[in-house]
Figure 1 (spheres, rainbow, N blue to C red):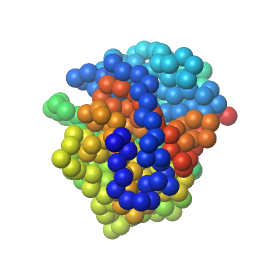
Figure 2 (tube, one colour):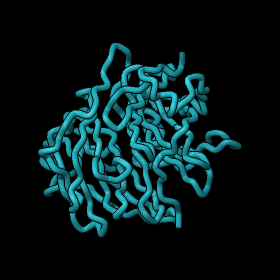
Figure 3 (tube, rainbow, N blue to C red):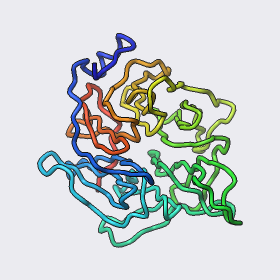
Figure 4 (cartoon, helix red, strand yellow):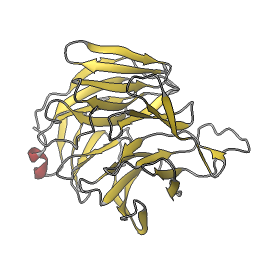
Amino acid sequence: MPIEQMAPELEQIIDLDAEIRELGSGYGGANGPAEGPLWLHEGNYLLFSDIHNDRRMKWSEGEGVTVFTEGTNRANGLTRDLQGRLLSAEHDGRRVARLSRDGDRTTVIANSFQGRQLNRPNDVIVKSDGSIYFTDPWTFPRVANQWEQTISGVYRVSPDLGTMTLLVGDFTLPNGLAFSPDESVIYVNDSRRGHIRAFDVLPTGGIALSSDRVFADLRGDRPGVPDGMKVDVEGNVYCGGSGGLWILDSTGKHLGTVVHGQEATTNLCMGGDDWKTLFFTTRGTLGSVQIKIAGIPVPTDR
């Protein structure tokens, strides 16, 4: 059964017979999978990263998948800032970058911390005040040089881009991250440890380290690790995990799994006219399934 039910509440979120669509295939490779899906509401299309082939892909219902941009510094996670400008976590650039609306100018959001170059930024999100949060796991294989970071960090960049703060540095492989609907909690998954951690967000935008807790463990006997993460308007959490794409409630209870049949879920987002299409990437494919609760909208190009 493509939708595995673990708790009766799942039927409030997704139909148990919902169709899982494969929208495209043949992406990724040994050096990076399909990743970073992002819905652009005003254009009614989706962007996603084809890391291995160093390109950004576009999907729309009418045209299917086409090449949107080539030469992306092997970008991974994508999002938009409050002005609708594209932000990307670049593997080869080892930075978080912002693209101007016309696509002609790139602004470096973050590329170093305390004089050391970042490792390989993975995913990025934006808070409602304009501050930018991103994960920076160690590079594998590690390149030994004097500028290399010694930690796998989760960082915050202030809205004016003037201050960059290390929020927490004890992850093994920090990956996807997301806020609760009221932004009082930030979730960060650790792909290597197989779980999602949660932290209370302070009024300053920092996190209360004393509130650190394991929100959910997503390990199991099937392929797949915690990767990518989104939250819907009611606080349910969606994340890659063992066997497919896990759906959890706001307490971390596992409600069910979208079993798409691929080796691993690499990232996901909500989109469509009503933000109720759940798009997901795997190592080599792009897919979608309809849900009943809207995802938290991403800013549009104003």
